[in-house]
Image (tube, rainbow, N blue to C red; front, side, top):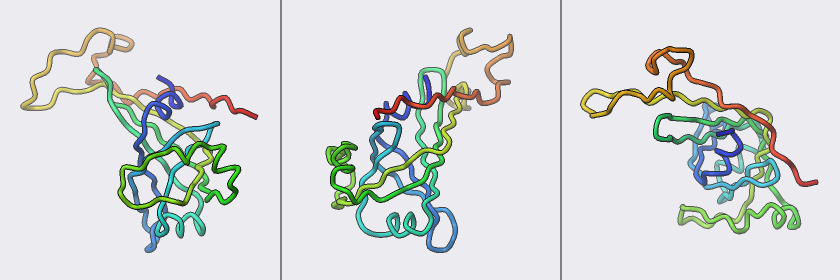
Length: 160
């Protein structure tokens, strides 16, 4: 799968921002992808204060298939949306947050880089699992010798 397909297939990610003490802070967020950007809802507070001063953020999702674990990381610029037409056009008004807190602020993440990795699942002690199928072999190397494999990234088509 391609990075954008993976981003479009999920609804829960992690937003990394600069925290009050200068250390990274991480928040689970529901999100949606529209027109080559990621949109999230937020309550007033830490996230909004941070992106106003430090708009450079990271966003990550991960998952697994039958044979692989995967991760997609986006480095982006975060911007609070304040124009009604932009908010409505993004579709973020339809985004439902899993958090019970009211989230009436809207943030657009404009990607600078998007990278992805996938790597074969490995047998864990105490967990019954058969051998990796031949489809996980690359250049004749067994699955446990593989380094994470890049997931190709192609920019999404934007509606202009």
